[in-house]
Each structure stands twice: as structure tokens, then as C-alpha cells.
Length: 433
Image (cartoon, rainbow, N blue to C red; front, side, top):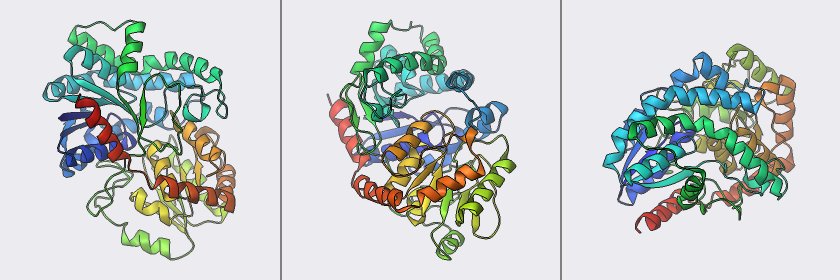
């Protein structure tokens, strides 16, 4: 089989697809990953095929729109969705061009949250096989613990499903521009609500998270295979850093962390990791001061990722890094302060360390509340509400025995899972038919 994986987005969207692609290739399939220009060199280094979306996430994140979108500045869901639609509209032409060029050479297309409707349009127009890969549970369900948009997160309630339907209606225009441009070029009309619902129900869907963190919901609108996280092979030579080629977080070499980083970690008590990944900041200097003041007030050593927020913190007991492999670094940390991206949060869960989540946008508030609901860290603090005092309080709370013990126990459970193997087996069973 020839698979085309649509990895539209930042590192958190691309890395799981690369992990899946390596698993599919090992099983004898041909794999092409469609991604932004930031990741071309890294994807090709893995021996996977590559096709580009013609844009750079790193460059986009530094535009005015990117800083407003990724900086956690919006105070309402409506405002956040409006900015996301602007990004989708901006990208519709280049993404559509890439898909129309690449699809004829492949048998199976795997889309994700931001490209699922485009995937349906292509599948209906061309007959290509289509599956959906989700990295967060964005499917309507009454089970609050398994739904990003749950109104009653701690309850099993029909209200979650009802309000979820309204939220889905509001989110649909965000992903519509790419699909609309595709349908225009293909000369096909958007299916009606009944046909679209049937398409959804009949599309194989993979949820690349641990069932220990996201329990399978009995009323999801289609059969969903919860596989476990898709992680890169644990052997030397696989770059597993949180950045990417062209991103500030990419260290430029694979394997063990940099010797200077290891020396810093081993020079005292385990430090706390602080990093917001691909999230931007409208005020990098102010954000850096906030992090420095919080670490000083909490009395902790810290490893700070520069990332797209352009953090730079100096002083005794603090080291600012360009990048390091999460799966190698996090087990050496006392706690992880992150933005709540699915990949970063999953890596901290696997490492068995407590977390402090500072959501900026999207599904990040969900991961923050799941960390807290599972007892692996304090309640999340939204980026727009973050102060040095709140961050210091969160760090101190995360280091208490209760949160640390719960994180360690959950880590022991999720490390036994092989999400890539489960996903490959499910895809082979599905498309062999």
C-alpha cells in the first residue's frame, strides 16, 4: 500500500505522523508525509517520502497573525476560532495544490483534525482510501473525560453531547476553507448533512493517545481505535527533540542530550523543565522575566526551552536550551511546565513526572484539565492569566508527593503501550478489505 499522511501543523502534528510512517514502512508499505517546509530535511532523513505544503510554520508563528493566534492572547473561544479561520484561509491555496498533486500516486490518505474535511472531499472525488488520525478527543460524546469541548468535564451527561454539537458547528468554518478550495478545483459540491454524517461514521478513525488518559467513549459518532501514543523508535539516530528543522527547538543532532545539558542536570537536584513549544509570545522579554521570577520564587533549578516564544532566561540554576528529546530529557526532570500540547503532555505522562500546564489555545485546556483530573498536577492556568506568582505556586504544588506519586504510577501504565504497532495493525486490517 502507498500511504499519504497529511501532517499539516506544527511539530506536535508532524512527529506522530513520522512515527506512524516509520511503522508503516517497517511493515512493508510506501509512505509519503505532507508537511510544511520546516520539516523537510528531518522527514527525508528518516527515509520517508516528502511533499511540501509550501509554507513555514516557524515563519508564520512570527507574523502578527501568528503571534496573536499562537500566543494565547484571545480571551474568547470565538476570537480564537476567528484567528484559526484566518490561518486556514491563508493556507487553503497551497495546501489544496499539494493534495491534488500528491493524491493520485497513493492508495490511502490519512488526514488529521485540520484536514479531515479535505480528506473526505478527496476520498469522495477520487476513490482513495481515507482514515482519520486524531491526537486529541474532539469527537462528540457525553463522557466528559473523553471530550475536548465537554461542558461538564467530570460527568457523563447528555449536556456534553448537546453542547458539543453546537461547538462542532462553530468549529466547522475553521477547517472549511481548505476543503472548499479543493471542492472548487475538483468541481464537486459539499455533501448534505445526512451524507456527511454517514461519511463520518464510515471513516476509520485512530486516536493516538493512551486509553489510560482518554477512556474510550461508548457514544463516539464512529468506531474509534484508541491506540496509545505514536512515538518514534527508541534507538540512537532518531531525532526526538521538540523542535524541528528550521524551528528554534531543533538541536541539529540526534541521540543523547547535549553534554552541557547533561552536566547541568547532574550538577544538583533534578530541575524543572519550562517550555511552550511552538507557541509564540507577543512579549518574549516579559515572558522570560515571568519564568525567571517564578523559578526563583519556587526555589527550583530550571531547564528552559527557547521555543517559538523566544524565551531566554539566565542566572544561577537556570539553563536555556534550543532543544532536547522529550523522551530523553523529561525522565530526568522533577516536573514539566508546558503549554498542554498533546505531544508534550503525552511525553510527560510517559516519563512519569508531574506537570504544570499553561494552555494557550485549541485542545490545550483539555490536556491541562486531564493532568489535574488524573492527579498528575495542579489545575491549569491559561497563558493570558499567567503571573510569576501563579506559576511559582503551580510548580511548588506539582512537586508535592501526591502529584509526583500519581504521575509515576500513570507513567508505569502508559509506557507498556505500543501505539504505532496498534495503529499499523488496524490500518492493515481495514484497508486489506
